[in-house]
Each structure stands twice: as C-alpha cells, then as structure tokens.
Image (cartoon, rainbow, N blue to C red; front, side):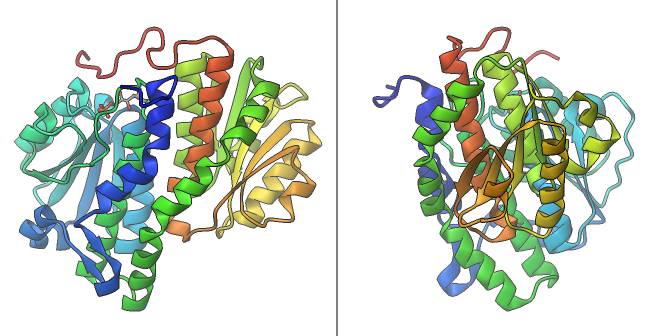
Length: 366
Ligand code: M6R
C-alpha cells in the first residue's frame, strides 16, 4: 500500500505533482481564463464585499493560512488575519457579520479548529472550509467550502495536504482578485498559465532527492537548525522547521530572515545549519544580505535558490535549485526540498517517520 516506497511520507511527497493537479482540476482552465469554484460563486457577494477574512487553523494548516494571507491581501486586497485556532477560541475575538472565516484542516477533525469555527458561526460570520477529508466534522460544520484533493494522507507529518491547501487557497485568492477587479486581466491570465505548469515543476523539484540525501548525510547529527525566508517563503521556513522537529526530533526554528538580527543571530556559529530560502523574488537582494550575515558568523548555509542563480552559489556552502516560477507560486516549489531534507535526516537517525513519538494524525482533543 506504500506503492513501493519505504514510508508513506516519501510516497506522499512524491504524489504531489498529482495531488496538486487534482486540487486544480475542474477549477482552473487557463486557456479560457476560467476559474470556477461553485462554493465561491454561491457566496459571491459575501466574498466580494467582505470587510475582512479570518483564517483559523493549527500546525501545517496554519502555515498554509499564512501563505493565503499574503496572497489574498496582495492579489485581492482584502485584509486577512490568520489565527491559531486554539488561541482564537479562548480570547473573545472580534467577529463581525461581514467577516468571512476560513477554517483550514487536512483531517477536518481538529478539535480547536472546529471549536473556533463554531464560535465564529455563533457571531454570524460566513464559515468557509478548506478540508481534505470528505464529510469530516469541520467540512460538515461549514456553510461552504472547497475540498483539497490530496487523497488520504497517512504520514503524521503533513506534506501533500499542505501543497494541496496552498493550491486551493491560491485559486481562491485569484478568484477573489478576479471578482473584485484588483488584478489586470493579462496579469491574472499569466498567473493562471503559470499555475498550470506547477505540477510539472514539482515533478522536477522531486528529482533533487539524491542531492538532498547527500546533504542530509552531512547534517544528520546536528542538534539545531534555523530556517529563514521572507515574504511567501517565510511560512515555508516555518513549515520546513516544523517538519524537521516532528520527525527527526531535531530542534529547529523558522524565522522571517530579517528578524534574525533581533535575536536569533546570537545562535549562529560554525555548528549551526541555516536553511535559507532565497528564490528570485522581490526580496531576493535582501535575502542575499541575510546569507552574508550568516556566513560572516560561520553559520553553515544550505540555500534553496532559483535555477540558474549564479550569485548565491558563491557564498552558500550548499545550494539546492528549484525551477523558476511566478513569485506567487513559489511556496509550492520551495517547500519540496525541505520536506525531503527532513525525511532523509529522520530516516538516517533511525526515527519512525510515519508515526513520530507523541504525535497523532488528527488532534481531536484540545
Ligand atoms: O488535520 P489538520 O490540518 O487540522 O491538522 C492540523 C495540525 O495538527 C497538523 O497540521 C500538524 O501540525 C501536522 N502533524 C503537521 O505535519
């Protein structure tokens, strides 16, 4: 049932070209500049006139929520807040009738996320679900929603569910941009075309597996890791760090790269591996300076870069190239090497990658 792979996690990582495609199917036809999601159409006016979107989720789903925040604000110009469901439900949050709450959950059974959406519902918000498990408690409790089509995810560490969530949320951001007229038609069309190319590019990124395995070998005995990224790659840094913690039990922290100088830089010495996501986007130059800061303190840099980058290979110890893509779609590619890196490190350390200690696939207790 693992399809020839030694672990479900690896199988699920390699399924991503397919699961991303399945999450777009029927929703995006770039050729005709067509985006459809019946649940959004049904509540078109609510979405069009939303004062604010609140996103509630936990763990990896919360990271997908952060990606969505940046995309919805950038493309559709609707203010978005992302909250840990566990905090939201206990802090008497301000929820107004014109608000839309998006609950993101792979399992659809996470107790805190379910309680958070019930609370928001009782205050009159429209509740929209992005779930993977059909008919799950969260899916049933929402007013509307769009399923991710990742298929069953068995590995406790979420991989294909994350990229499916990001895919669906990106489509939602694009649809809202279209309905609100916040994007030039040609720019939107271009983004759609590039979105269609993502599964093939993910396929290409997966070919990095051997290369990443070699890097994992070098760092498998490290006790700490730092992950840095800016913009859309900041949530990816958080996700990379979470993956490593969960399955290899190595202490890892993700930070927005510019926050480093406000504290974490004190941790950097010759024993600290620093994974920097430095793809070509509008914060590229800034990330390059962050890499120099790490190097100046002898930190060991593993950089995730865009194919063809000639600058960063001069300064980073290890470089992993991902295919070039539209800036808005980079998280779908930059997360792949991070999943593989944590997988290989965990296997080399003899950890149970599919069922890490102390964790359950869905957290149905608070
Ligand atoms: O099923 P959900 O998406 O609601 O689960 C939320 C988190 O418990 C989950 O993402 C958790 O952080 C994963 N183990 C991450 O790999």
